[in-house]
Length: 407
Image 1: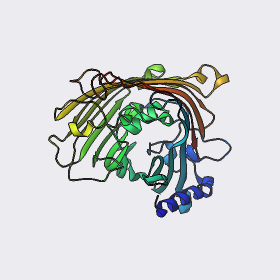
Image 2 (image 1 turned 90 degrees about the vertical axis):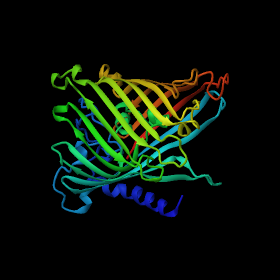
Image 3 (image 1 turned 180 degrees about the vertical axis):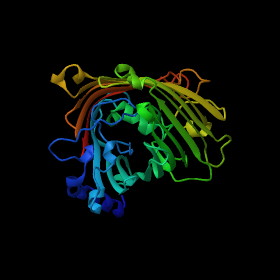
Image 4 (image 1 turned 135 degrees about the horizontal axis):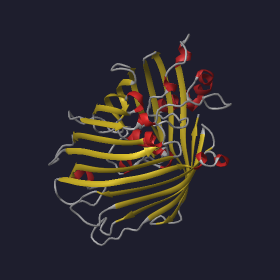
C-alpha cells in the first residue's frame, strides 16, 4: 500500500473522535445512545431506525439540523468494518479456517450548503497486493458532489465516483451486506460504484424512489478504457403506500442497463442487464424476489463461468431472500433477526447443467446502532458440467461468524 494512502486512512481514523461531538449521523452518534430517526427505506416503506450506509443513501442525517457556525460543524466522519471468522465444512478447502477483515469503510462528508454536500468513502479489506507482504489495498469507493432538490423536494444530482443504481439499493433492502455481496455483485455482473453522473430521489408521499445514471461502465476498480459509456435506470414503486399497514410495504422494482465493452479485439461488445423485483418491506418482515436477464460478450464471461462459443452469451437467474425481525413479535429478543437467501445463476441458457446455486441461512442480532452480529451457513453448489462435461465440481459449504462495527 502506498504511504500516501496510509496517511489518508490514519488521518480519517484519528479525526473521528474530534468530530464526534458535532456528528449527528446514526453512524457516529454520541456514545450514550445512537440517534433514532424514521427515514424512508429503499422502497419507501416506514422502518425502524436505520444504519447509515456508505453509499450516500439520502436520510435525515445528511441534512444539518441547524445552521453551522464553523466548518467543523459541517464535517461528519464515520466508519464501518466487517469482521469474520469462517470454517470450511466441505469442498476443496475442507477444514480450512481463517479470521478476516472483509471490508473497512472510512467516510467523510462536508456540508457545503443546505442543499449541497461532498462525500468521500475509502474502502479497504478483502483485496491484497500480489507482493510478498500481501498488505491490504485501500481505494476510493465513493467520491462525489451532491446537489439536492434540483428537480423538486427529495431529488438529487451526484457527480463523481457515484453509487450506482442497483447494488447500493439492493444492499440496503437486504440489510445484511456484512454476510457478503448481493447476487448480481457476487456473480460479477454489476458494480456498486463508478465514475459518472446520476439523478435520483424519492417519489412523493413515500410511493417509491428512482435513479438514472451515466457512467464509464468499467466499475470503480478499473480505469476507463475508451469512449463507450453505460446507462443505468431503476424505478421502485410502492403503489399502496397511502393505505398504511402491511399493504404499504408492497413494492415492485424495475432496473435496466445497457453499455458496450471497450476492450480491443472483441467480436461483440454488448453488455446489458434487466431485473424485475417484487417484495414486501415492513417492520417485522422483508421479502423480495428478483429475476434477472443478462447479455455479454463471450470473452468477458468465459473466464468466470462455463459458457458456449457464441459471440453473445445470454444468461438468467434469480435471487430470493427474507429477513424476519423476531423482536417485533417478542420484545424480550429485540434485535434478533432470522434470514435466508437463495441465488441461482444460469450463465448461458443454451447449455445444460452449468448453473451455480448459493444458499445462505443465519441468525443476526442488532446489539445497538453500532454493532451487529451474524452466525450463518453458506453453501455454493454447481451443475454437473461446470468446468467441463461431467466434471461434477464439489459443493462448497462453510460456517461464518461475522460482525459489523460502526463508528
